[in-house]
Amino acid sequence: MKLTFLVPPCYDNKQPAERSAGCTRVVYPMINIYELTAAAALRDLGGYEVDYQDFVFNGTGSASEKDFKDFLQKDNSDVYLIWTVNLSLNSDLTAISIIREFHPDTPVILMGPGATYFINRALQTHQNIFIVRGEPELTLLELLDALSSGREPEGIKGVSYTDKNGKIVNNPSRPLNEDLDALPFPARDLLKGKIYHNPKLKTGPYTTMFTSRNCPYRCIYCVPSSLTFAREIEFRKDHPGRKPTIGFRSLESVKKEIDMLAAQGVKAIGFMDDNFIWNEERTRGICDILRPHGIVWGCQARVDAITEPIAKMLGESGCRYVDLGIESFDEGILKYIKKGITPEDIYRSVNLLKKYNVPVKLNVLLGSSPLETRDTIRHTLKEAKKLDVDQVMFNIVSPFPGTEYYEICMENGWIKGNQYRPTDVQHESILNLPQISAEEMEKLLFRNNISYFLSPRFISKQIRRFSSWSEFKAAAKALKLKLFH
Image (cartoon, rainbow, N blue to C red; front, side, top):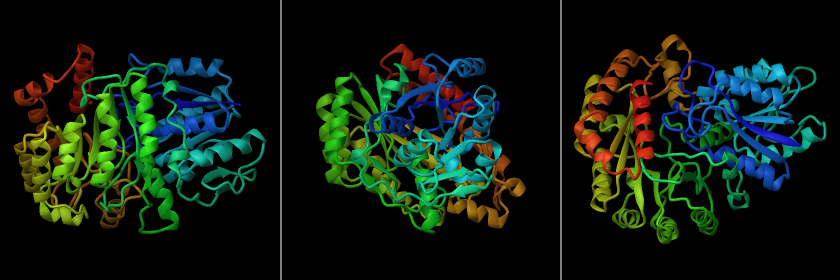
């Protein structure tokens, strides 16, 4: 049985959705480590023939819609699989229409947060569609076993489908995967040698990796990685108001994968954990694994997790960026969004990381609270720039369905047209808050981005750190997309 994972072309006349983080459009191509883990499970645990076709990034640029149709016309896959996020859902449904022109009866499996949340919309559009909700690996194995035997997936946990009578069936949820070590390493070989760049690491060969799943904190707006978001949406159906437990890989498993990547020549790793730093002991263990290989790496962390010993570990083990989600420097806003930090925590953590020469990227989110005003935004932008970190990323919140903030915004009529639509958080807003409109937030964001990213200070700081001309060109292209999409 041949299975093909598809990244279809973008059919909404916009920049393609970034399917790994899941909440933005592509600025630079990222490896979808979650999709490749699912592919590895089907190949290594299920024994299936697995292929991966990316019609957004073909290694040198974007593949075309013609390439997609040419592929479908010649292909003989038994099942197609698509990792779907909110921003890609409409485009993916269009892609399925095109698949149906060439393969009217071939099953299509949708995974990811877009499919997990918008079940009815996906299933009502086409026939022979199956949705794998939440964590996909174990569910996929059972579902493919049923499909290969010609059976309906009746009772398979975590699956939604349309039965023979045209009724949408939502099987019970699957319990969380408690043994992440049992999963095979991501099938990176399916990328067929494509070269990926991370402008924050500025060297390669580069890949991504995860050591844990989920985050226990309760930020009301939060859309974590696309896998975690799917995991949370599914979990909350049976556990309202609760967060899924954290899934950890053992240090032994992490070491095996890093050793393997180093042997393959990988020089840079971006850790995709929603929260990479949990405590000093685990952080020290991973830093000790990385250090002998000379791999440069980066991660995401909370500001209140940064202690002086941890900052020192990071600096001594090749950490070249820490993404800190700060969102605002207004204490009232931080309390409202349940961030669990104070402005003082931000200053302290940034100073510690700078002390040990660890580059810092601050993530600022405009409009995450009805307390937001032009003055709070200007204050946050001013304070973020004053800290003089390596980079600041400014975005506008999107009230994603499945978050607490979405419910608040719908109840108060703050979403334009009283209906959610996917937006690119790097440029657009659909929120008219009590004290600031969507248009005002967009203008403040654009003006700030121009003044920040095109400043001589930012450019001179970044340009000195590139190791090759190709890395510089990739970063320049990403900056152009960030500013002007």
